[in-house]
Length: 71
Image: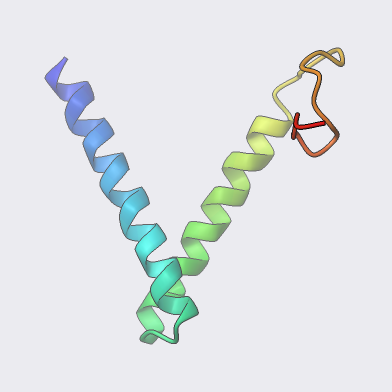
């Protein structure tokens, strides 16, 4: 149980650090923040693409094409 907690905490710290670098790079931070921001955004795109190709079948959910459901 504690190993899972350690791994999830490390992932959470990496995500928070990546988000901070994206915000800092958008405001003109140092070059290394732009590199971390690029890596963070690329990882986010990979996660989003893997979620899309998860084989969801059928039109359930009641949302629009963009995923919103506020009619």
